[in-house]
Each structure stands twice: as structure tokens, then as C-alpha cells.
Length: 303
Image (cartoon, rainbow, N blue to C red; front, side, top):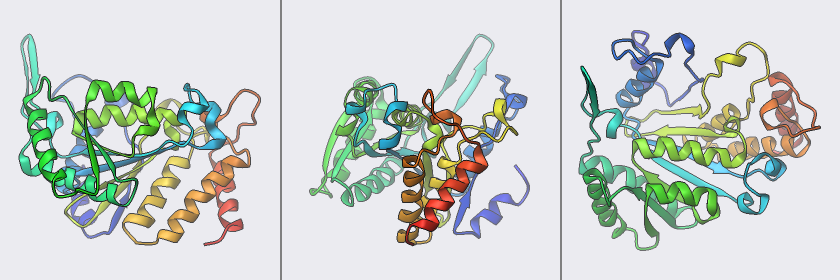
């Protein structure tokens, strides 16, 4: 990581992050650094303990999902993933013929994440699913016990405990049942990518990482896609929607955030399609053209 980068980030209200990675760093060598490690370090140093991934179905893209339109229609959920604990930060070691990673959590780490999720649910449909693997994992039993304790402080929000394997199935069986979903780091990483495909493309999905340090980080959930780098065909919607989240959560510019989101929907309704969201027979446009269509829709709307 570039020297001084963390300190510069700490002096800001928000950070908008582009996707990183590529085949140059694709290795299983434990002694070779990967860009993901830099992201993990940044989250830890900036005290970003909660990752928010909104998942919303777009009527204009109903044909894109592998699920039937009647299954994904009206999907509107937020996955709240713990970011600074669990197997990604626990003790790990490569042995001559084995390896291990430790899924480790403290009560305080679980409580601050679940408390944040409850507060988020209060402003939505007042339904929270807490996802764990309490039938097998001791860390999940701790998670469930702490979640139950936090739930007692929020009687106006219904909390449902669900095992992670059942949640993975329910996301494709009946995704509209979910409003706010909170879970630990590894489970959240997997489930949020699965939920992302409900929309038909991860190129549509933004995210925010918030925490205790005052600065929040915003980024599209998709990767760097090195196979199409420089070709001008990447879908910009996830980055644009990440900026909308930044306007809302970091700057309190709620009307502006809603206007940007509405502009994306209007552009899609008007037929703007990048390659990843185009159905057979639809006209495909590039990154610049897709961005221009969103900007036009924004100007034609009202801020």
C-alpha cells in the first residue's frame, strides 16, 4: 500500500474506490502479496466494520436474471456484512501438508455490527435476518447469543435467525422475504455476491463500508475485470450508484442521492444497455455512452 495513504484517507469524509486486481497478482503463494490484502488492511485501519450491499431489482432488467421475473420483482434488501473479524483476520498458517484459518469474533465486534443492522432496519421494513451456522460453529453460537441480546433492545424490529446454508437457498427461492440481512465476514462475502446476481449483473450493484473512524468507503462490488480492461465496455452503474450512496450516507445529500438513483433507473427504462445487461436483440453501448445516458436522465429530472 502506498505510504501515507491511510492517513490521507482518515482526513477525508469519504473515499470512492475503484476495483483492483488482475492476473499479475493471482497466486496461491502465501508470501506473495495480493491487492485484496491491501483492501483488508484499509478496512481495518479505517475501522470500517460494516459493509452495506443494497440489492434491488430493476424492472427494466427483469429479463436479465436467471430467476423468473415474478420471483425477483420487488426485491429490495440490504446485506450488512461484518468487515474486520472472522476467518479473514483470524490466525492462519500454511503447514507442510495442511493449512488452517481461524474464525474468531469478540462479543463487542458482533454487537456493534448487529446494532448497526437493527438501526438500519428501523428505517426500513423493520425486519432483520441474522445469519449464522450456530448448529455447527462455536463462533456462530456466540453470534446468535449476542444478536438475541441486541434484539431485546429493539422490540419494534422483528429478528429472525437463519442458518447460512438455508439463507443461500432462500435467496434464490424467495428473495422478497428479506429486508435487512446481517452476518459475519466470510458468510457475508459469499451471500452478497449470490444476492447480487438476482439483478442479473454485479455490474449494477454498489456498496458502502462504514465504521467508527468517521470516514466511509464506497465501491462497486464487481472486480477489476482485467480481461476487458481498456475496451470501454464496462458497466458504470455500480460505481455511479456507489457515489449515490456516498451522497446519502457521508454528505447527507439525500435528495441528490435519490436523483442519481432515479437517473440510473430512467436510463435503463429508456433502453440504455451495457454488454453485461443486454438481452438478445438489444442495442449495446459502451461505458461512455452508458454514463452519458445517466447524465442526460439526471439533467432531465429534478434535483
